[in-house]
Length: 204
Image (cartoon, rainbow, N blue to C red; front, side, top):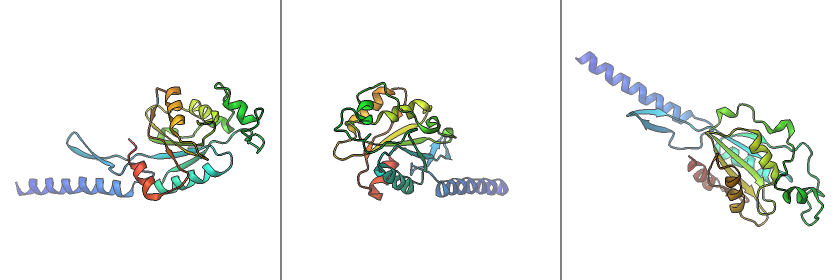
Protein backbone atom coordinates (compact mmCIF):
# COMPACT_ATOMS: atom_id res chain seq x y z
CA UNK A 1 0.00 0.00 0.00
CA UNK A 2 2.86 2.37 0.85
CA UNK A 3 4.47 1.69 -2.54
CA UNK A 4 1.20 2.44 -4.36
CA UNK A 5 0.70 5.66 -2.44
CA UNK A 6 4.27 6.72 -3.22
CA UNK A 7 3.78 6.03 -6.94
CA UNK A 8 0.60 8.15 -6.97
CA UNK A 9 2.38 11.06 -5.28
CA UNK A 10 5.30 10.86 -7.73
CA UNK A 11 2.94 10.77 -10.72
CA UNK A 12 1.05 13.84 -9.47
CA UNK A 13 4.32 15.73 -8.94
CA UNK A 14 5.47 14.87 -12.47
CA UNK A 15 2.23 16.10 -14.07
CA UNK A 16 2.36 19.33 -12.07
CA UNK A 17 5.98 19.99 -13.02
CA UNK A 18 5.25 19.34 -16.71
CA UNK A 19 2.35 21.79 -16.79
CA UNK A 20 4.35 24.45 -14.93
CA UNK A 21 7.34 24.01 -17.25
CA UNK A 22 5.17 24.30 -20.36
CA UNK A 23 3.47 27.45 -19.13
CA UNK A 24 6.67 29.13 -18.00
CA UNK A 25 8.60 28.40 -21.19
CA UNK A 26 5.85 29.03 -23.74
CA UNK A 27 6.69 31.54 -26.47
CA UNK A 28 4.40 33.51 -28.79
CA UNK A 29 1.75 33.13 -26.08
CA UNK A 30 -1.15 35.56 -26.00
CA UNK A 31 -3.16 33.97 -23.17
CA UNK A 32 -1.75 34.25 -19.70
CA UNK A 33 -3.86 31.41 -18.33
CA UNK A 34 -2.29 28.81 -20.61
CA UNK A 35 -3.07 25.91 -18.28
CA UNK A 36 -6.72 24.93 -18.54
CA UNK A 37 -8.65 22.21 -16.75
CA UNK A 38 -10.15 19.57 -19.04
CA UNK A 39 -11.76 16.29 -17.96
CA UNK A 40 -10.48 16.94 -14.43
CA UNK A 41 -6.88 16.88 -15.73
CA UNK A 42 -4.65 19.95 -16.02
CA UNK A 43 -3.51 20.31 -19.62
CA UNK A 44 -1.12 22.92 -20.90
CA UNK A 45 -2.34 25.02 -23.81
CA UNK A 46 -0.55 27.90 -25.48
CA UNK A 47 -1.82 30.21 -28.18
CA UNK A 48 0.80 31.03 -30.77
CA UNK A 49 0.47 34.45 -32.37
CA UNK A 50 1.42 36.03 -35.68
CA UNK A 51 1.48 39.78 -36.27
CA UNK A 52 0.77 40.66 -39.90
CA UNK A 53 0.68 44.19 -41.23
CA UNK A 54 0.43 46.44 -44.25
CA UNK A 55 2.31 49.72 -43.98
CA UNK A 56 2.45 52.32 -46.73
CA UNK A 57 4.54 54.95 -44.92
CA UNK A 58 6.24 53.00 -42.13
CA UNK A 59 4.02 54.08 -39.22
CA UNK A 60 2.07 50.82 -39.03
CA UNK A 61 5.30 48.86 -39.48
CA UNK A 62 6.72 50.47 -36.34
CA UNK A 63 3.55 49.67 -34.39
CA UNK A 64 3.61 46.06 -35.61
CA UNK A 65 7.23 45.60 -34.60
CA UNK A 66 6.55 46.93 -31.11
CA UNK A 67 3.43 44.78 -30.75
CA UNK A 68 5.28 41.63 -31.82
CA UNK A 69 8.09 42.40 -29.41
CA UNK A 70 5.74 42.85 -26.46
CA UNK A 71 3.67 39.70 -27.00
CA UNK A 72 6.48 37.54 -28.41
CA UNK A 73 4.84 36.97 -31.80
CA UNK A 74 6.22 36.25 -35.25
CA UNK A 75 6.00 38.92 -37.98
CA UNK A 76 4.68 38.89 -41.54
CA UNK A 77 4.60 41.96 -43.78
CA UNK A 78 1.78 42.32 -46.29
CA UNK A 79 3.85 43.79 -49.11
CA UNK A 80 2.05 45.16 -52.17
CA UNK A 81 3.34 43.89 -55.50
CA UNK A 82 3.59 47.53 -56.55
CA UNK A 83 4.71 49.81 -53.73
CA UNK A 84 2.75 52.99 -53.00
CA UNK A 85 4.30 56.34 -53.82
CA UNK A 86 3.51 59.65 -52.12
CA UNK A 87 1.36 60.53 -55.12
CA UNK A 88 -0.52 57.24 -54.76
CA UNK A 89 -1.33 58.12 -51.16
CA UNK A 90 -2.64 61.61 -51.87
CA UNK A 91 -6.20 61.29 -50.57
CA UNK A 92 -7.05 64.78 -51.84
CA UNK A 93 -6.47 63.65 -55.43
CA UNK A 94 -9.56 61.91 -56.77
CA UNK A 95 -7.42 60.19 -59.38
CA UNK A 96 -4.73 58.90 -57.02
CA UNK A 97 -4.22 55.16 -56.73
CA UNK A 98 -5.44 54.94 -53.13
CA UNK A 99 -8.55 57.00 -53.87
CA UNK A 100 -9.47 54.83 -56.83
CA UNK A 101 -8.94 51.63 -54.82
CA UNK A 102 -10.97 52.81 -51.85
CA UNK A 103 -13.85 53.93 -54.06
CA UNK A 104 -14.05 50.45 -55.56
CA UNK A 105 -15.20 47.84 -53.04
CA UNK A 106 -14.18 45.10 -55.46
CA UNK A 107 -10.61 46.38 -55.60
CA UNK A 108 -8.06 43.75 -54.55
CA UNK A 109 -4.50 45.15 -54.91
CA UNK A 110 -1.97 42.41 -55.62
CA UNK A 111 0.34 41.27 -52.83
CA UNK A 112 3.89 40.01 -53.25
CA UNK A 113 4.02 36.20 -53.42
CA UNK A 114 0.25 36.17 -53.42
CA UNK A 115 0.08 37.19 -49.76
CA UNK A 116 0.23 33.56 -48.62
CA UNK A 117 1.48 32.97 -45.07
CA UNK A 118 3.68 29.89 -44.84
CA UNK A 119 2.90 27.54 -41.97
CA UNK A 120 -0.25 29.50 -41.09
CA UNK A 121 -1.64 26.36 -39.48
CA UNK A 122 0.72 26.72 -36.50
CA UNK A 123 -0.88 30.00 -35.38
CA UNK A 124 -3.98 30.37 -33.22
CA UNK A 125 -4.15 34.18 -33.23
CA UNK A 126 -3.39 36.43 -36.21
CA UNK A 127 -3.10 40.17 -35.64
CA UNK A 128 -3.79 42.14 -38.82
CA UNK A 129 -2.50 45.72 -38.90
CA UNK A 130 -3.09 48.55 -41.32
CA UNK A 131 -3.39 52.34 -41.60
CA UNK A 132 -6.95 53.67 -41.61
CA UNK A 133 -7.91 54.82 -45.10
CA UNK A 134 -11.25 56.49 -45.68
CA UNK A 135 -12.38 55.42 -42.18
CA UNK A 136 -11.77 51.72 -42.89
CA UNK A 137 -9.13 49.15 -43.81
CA UNK A 138 -7.29 49.45 -47.15
CA UNK A 139 -8.59 47.01 -49.76
CA UNK A 140 -5.23 45.22 -49.78
CA UNK A 141 -6.33 43.80 -46.41
CA UNK A 142 -9.23 42.15 -48.23
CA UNK A 143 -6.72 40.66 -50.66
CA UNK A 144 -4.76 39.24 -47.73
CA UNK A 145 -7.76 37.82 -45.89
CA UNK A 146 -8.99 36.17 -49.06
CA UNK A 147 -5.57 34.69 -49.87
CA UNK A 148 -5.41 32.67 -46.65
CA UNK A 149 -7.70 30.39 -44.67
CA UNK A 150 -8.24 31.67 -41.13
CA UNK A 151 -10.76 29.02 -40.11
CA UNK A 152 -10.35 28.12 -36.45
CA UNK A 153 -8.18 31.16 -35.71
CA UNK A 154 -8.88 34.50 -34.09
CA UNK A 155 -8.21 37.55 -36.26
CA UNK A 156 -7.38 40.66 -34.25
CA UNK A 157 -7.32 43.96 -36.17
CA UNK A 158 -5.06 46.83 -35.15
CA UNK A 159 -4.45 50.11 -36.89
CA UNK A 160 -2.73 53.46 -36.96
CA UNK A 161 -4.60 56.61 -37.84
CA UNK A 162 -4.27 60.34 -38.10
CA UNK A 163 -7.62 60.88 -36.42
CA UNK A 164 -10.16 58.18 -37.28
CA UNK A 165 -11.11 55.31 -34.97
CA UNK A 166 -10.82 51.63 -35.87
CA UNK A 167 -14.50 50.95 -35.21
CA UNK A 168 -15.74 51.22 -38.80
CA UNK A 169 -12.88 49.10 -40.10
CA UNK A 170 -13.73 46.34 -37.61
CA UNK A 171 -17.40 46.45 -38.55
CA UNK A 172 -16.58 46.28 -42.26
CA UNK A 173 -14.20 43.34 -41.86
CA UNK A 174 -16.63 41.37 -39.71
CA UNK A 175 -19.42 41.98 -42.23
CA UNK A 176 -17.22 40.99 -45.17
CA UNK A 177 -15.95 37.77 -43.52
CA UNK A 178 -18.71 36.46 -41.23
CA UNK A 179 -17.28 32.93 -41.21
CA UNK A 180 -14.16 34.10 -39.37
CA UNK A 181 -13.76 34.86 -35.68
CA UNK A 182 -12.61 38.39 -34.87
CA UNK A 183 -11.19 39.72 -31.62
CA UNK A 184 -11.54 43.31 -30.44
CA UNK A 185 -9.61 45.73 -32.62
CA UNK A 186 -7.33 48.43 -31.27
CA UNK A 187 -5.68 51.64 -32.43
CA UNK A 188 -1.94 51.57 -31.79
CA UNK A 189 -1.02 55.20 -32.38
CA UNK A 190 0.75 55.10 -29.03
CA UNK A 191 2.24 51.95 -27.56
CA UNK A 192 1.80 51.24 -23.87
CA UNK A 193 3.31 47.89 -22.83
CA UNK A 194 0.92 47.20 -19.97
CA UNK A 195 -2.08 48.16 -22.09
CA UNK A 196 -0.94 45.90 -24.94
CA UNK A 197 -0.38 42.96 -22.62
CA UNK A 198 -3.85 43.37 -21.12
CA UNK A 199 -5.44 43.58 -24.59
CA UNK A 200 -3.55 40.54 -25.88
CA UNK A 201 -4.32 38.50 -22.77
CA UNK A 202 -8.05 38.96 -23.42
CA UNK A 203 -7.86 37.31 -26.84
CA UNK A 204 -9.70 33.97 -26.88
